Image 1 (cartoon, rainbow over the protein chains, first blue to last red):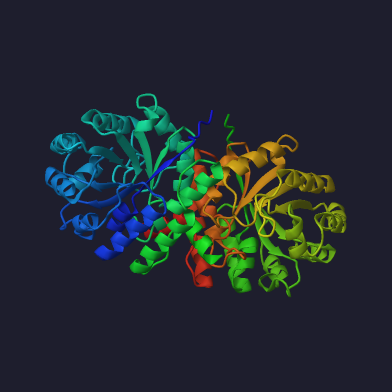
Image 2 (cartoon, rainbow over the protein chains, first blue to last red; image 1 turned 90 degrees about the vertical axis):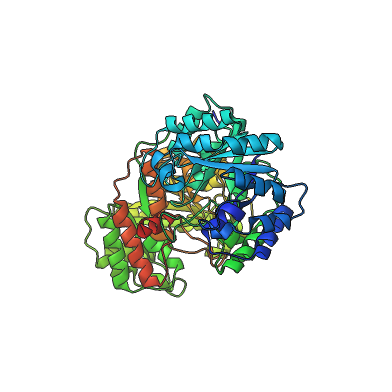
Length: 298
Length: 298
């Protein structure tokens, strides 16, 4: 039986997960983007990452970006992989942290140089710091529907990691199909398992559109009552495992889907589309959003 | 309750509905495309249109294209809007005709200069000719989920036209979201109505990806047991109502979806993708298929 949610909360990840995988833009471009996203009605915006600029030069100015924002009604979050990052994010005014691990051992090893277990242990000081400062923490689990190194991922592994992160104190788990290989059947199977153990209010989906399946996968997730969806304006961000391939699902396309399903979202599609054209102009490309291109062509 | 079909038949429309909305390519390019599609396992290929070259110059060489093909195992079809077209298609060796009308009066008037009723009456000689020569006829109904002139379309109008075409002798109705505005809820509502009156074996879906919803809409249709899907390799064909916007859903993306759902289809995805790269090279563009781009980037 379908149990579509009445309302969906979109977590806009374009300014972080998106721009992290694009060429660098100026601090002013990022500030303008986040202000435009807020003006379009987005209430949850991932605004940066407090990571080593050696590894992610695109996010080196996250403190400056966040300090330049004045959006009291918006929940601005940032990736904080360690205590140093968490402290810097807090100093910049961030009210929500995000931590990141994987459902794949190989991916975890290659990406963050440790086992899944160790990655979770390493977050304990970030979690303590967050608790002491009344900061919410979101947990990302990547490779939930497939891994570039291991291929298939056991849904039980996703359940295990998700429960660990919740036990650690995360308020929500964002389930990431990092390489965009999943299809609706796998999404349904994975979520059906997770929902036997985790309340749907604690789960979000984060799909990449590498194989064009993201929107269909979101539809399958909505069909099971999932009410939080990550998306990136203009489909920002490519796929590091397939050059030239698509990145995050475009927020515009998700909003169009929600409108069609009669699900509330509170976002102004035209302003959102304009924000996408603005940032892609700075990147010297066009939005990777069919909705945005169709609206623009009209 | 979901009733996914075990097997799906894909009707490949790239060489007609696709190329009709692209710049002209050579007869040799078309022949090579259709041969490559057949080699990839496609058994139903729309190969041309017998229409006035004044209106559709891209299809002026349909007779030459079809005469150059030798594909006894493939069901080659062609658009035959009138008796003259039907006779020419038959002479070229076509074994299946396709006729075309709309669920929108305004669209019908603007596109084929007559009312829906008249458009159906006009097909009676084509139908007679087909019957006399033992040729199957497929009926296209366009604008089933929205019209560029009227906006919303009443599902009852779609039912009415579909039943008329079936009564006329069509073996199957291809339901076209010509401007790609539909979403999964509308698809579900429309098909739920139609399936109360028409057997699912007589219905096919034909979705355009203008707003990125085509694959999700196909998923919704499969979920109701629809087992025939129109698609165009490389997402050929743009949208005449929004320049630069997407055209037909890409066959590669549909095949990837079917694979993920465990639905049989008999198509070799790599060969299909190669066929798409070949024809888009002739068009001076890239495939509009995320699957094809991701496979190529690997």
